[in-house]
Amino acid sequence: MTTRLIDDDLFDGADPPRLVGARCSGCGTVVFPRQDACPRCSDGSMSAHPLPVRGLVWSWTAQAFPPKPPYRAPADGYRPYHVGYVDLGEVLVEARLEVARPEIRIGLPVRLTTVPAYQDEDGTDVLTFAFRPDPGGRR
Image (cartoon, rainbow, N blue to C red):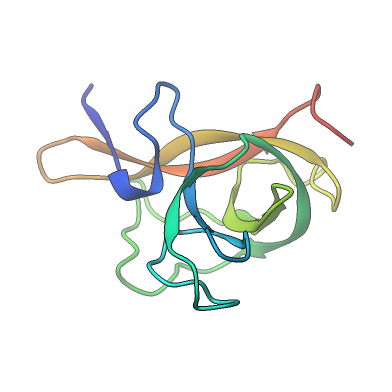
């Protein structure tokens, strides 16, 4: 089975991949995804900044209906899933949460993972980032 990441600019190229945001050289603000200008001070230059792989669920909800395009439903059809914000210390990241309903809660320790987003016409599984429970994570 062939796989590829949904957008190489979101990741650092390591195996397993890590998310990469940007840090402002002027005020230290960290953002994700990367951007060219600082949203806080507009003074410093933005440079690549690898993000932690562990964090805490800050808020969450159920994605009960298919998102708008460019979302592509999996071959077996849409299935509801959880989305939320994960607190990585320096930045909140909006992400899919691969957490069962009985387990999900604010403050849950989670760890970065990849999950299938859709399948290309050639059969390649396209992977996106998500977070899953991390029993050994910080509380």
